[in-house]
Image 1 (tube, rainbow, N blue to C red):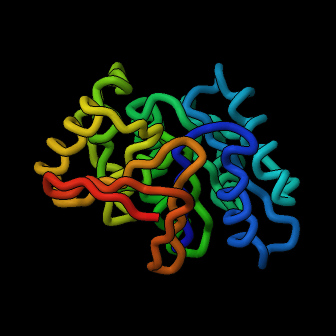
Image 2: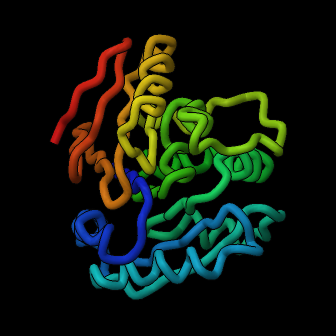
Amino acid sequence: MKLVLYSGGFGRENQALAVEVQDLLSRQKNPTVTFVPVSSEDADPDFRDCQRNLAAAGIKNFHCIPVDRPLSVSEEKKLLSSDGIFLGGGNTFDLLAHLRARKLLAKLKSYVNEGGILMGLSAGSILLTPNVMTAQVPSLDSDENEAGVTDLSALGLVPFEFSPHYRPGRRTDSELLDHSKRSKNPIYACADGQGIVVRDGTIRFVGRVTVFHRGYKYTLQ
């Protein structure tokens, strides 16, 4: 299993994570990464940033396949045959609803289990975890569930929850601590430019990660 969870940020902020992606793809000749935006209408800026970030690590071949509309057979084949798939940021509930509507959740799990590299940024990273609860915690930076998602389960590829764009503060920490008391999983909170790499069962942190678990808070690096 090979996963990369980006918190957020742009360009050089994520250079260290791009190097990790390069290492994961190093065995592939001319690897291709497919970017999956939350919305086809707002795809271009995020796709360009993904290209800039990974091009700096030597990756040159990219596709962009939105999932907020039905996919053709050839689009789905192109997506699932990519060496890497990058789930973009935006509204977490929308992304989950789109992937579920396209019946892609099980296929993405199979893709990872068969050796594909799955990456995410913000909402995309939350989708790799057991559920999308942290999309609304903390409330200062929460997503609206306008898609009406009632099943909050996600891909469940890792044994932790993920809180992107983390900025320590009394209200933020209080809400994450409260949530950690109700969750059986630890919550890993990362500031922009930081993230997590999962490789064959090993979890490694890029930058400082703040952990909220069972009402306690501590920091790992």
